[in-house]
Length: 295
Length: 240
Image (cartoon, rainbow over all chains, first blue to last red; front, side, top):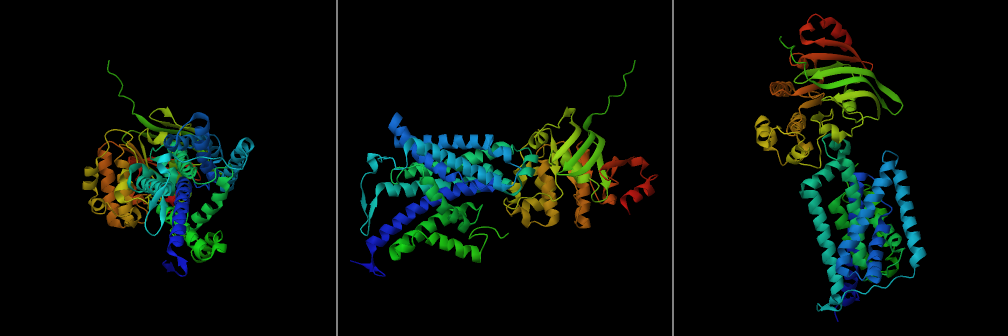
């Protein structure tokens, strides 16, 4: 059996695959955070809760209404996105002119409330969700076994990331988002309905989180606290990549997933700390992040 | 019985306008009127409140009281994007070129607010440099080109009242001359222009009237034909 640095290739590639999967979730989540931060200049502490809501909605819709995975893939993000628009319109907008600490605390409070309510109803032991039959099994690539659903997650996450990047960098609507990142007030002075754009941007950002949640439902334990666990890591990813860079958020997310996977293979004890270690190093050497603009 | 000549169309009427940035009271009761097709300047020293007046018209300052009528419509309760859609084009002092956008994206960013704006072809023939550099990052242009871009950007929208803040600031004389030609062309087209200007020699031959501002108030109104007679008074105000 072939080995790399004393580790069998099958083990290494298996961990790498897990790393890429985790990285795909990091990328989707940090992408949403970056989109929201760009225009709203707020750090959305409710992002993990929106991811969790996407996953919970998938399970609850199936259990109660028999809504299948394919429908949930669209419906859950739209429901959560609509909730995001309401949160922006009724809560965040009221404190728009205040110090950023207020919006940070507000989104944190919203996250705790959502998490608390769902914990009260469903507990934290985790809900079961079985993946659609078409994803059962996998294929043997020779050096490793690739479960179909994992492949699906990677492809979908990359597609959505690329689509979002394309929309922001290459379209008219995206030029509003990029310009708004620089000077939203002037853009409004040109006749662009910036308040509406802000609502929709927040809705879209949390929609990405909910989409990640739906993807996660069949493979991760679905509980009301799943969001707060992943959010801490995602914030580290965002710090490493640098706030506000769309492609930076995507690349860093996947990269950090891979680094985590590699660490799990070679030095498992450090696997949950390695991303934070990278964060510390990046903060010391390049405080604006790998892809951030120099202040 | 002959009818009286039609009253001139008031495109902008500002009355009793006060504006505040936080605790500081910047504008102390501004009254001014700009008729359609007029080019009116706001003169004064730095800090007299000229830029703030333009920003206040756009609803881009903190708190305001008083009245601002555009085309006879009260706009104090309007959001900035509604004001733009009344046909107002604002060119800020810092030019506001977006570094995240290329020249063409900058140019096409503001939505068309009225029909009758200039097409891209017309704009590029007026500003050939912008065409050559249309795929460059907006802020990579020279100061003069950026100013042309900032002007061109609001001409495309069809705005018929332009609020221009210090458009000649820091530019080479040859560019200033070019901007003067552009303003004359716009005047011929019948656009209404409110020009905040430090460079009096640039503004004097173009303008129909001048408002001189001091300490957040209108200190003097001077029409173009009174200019010679009031030159020394004006010099006092401007400190030249």
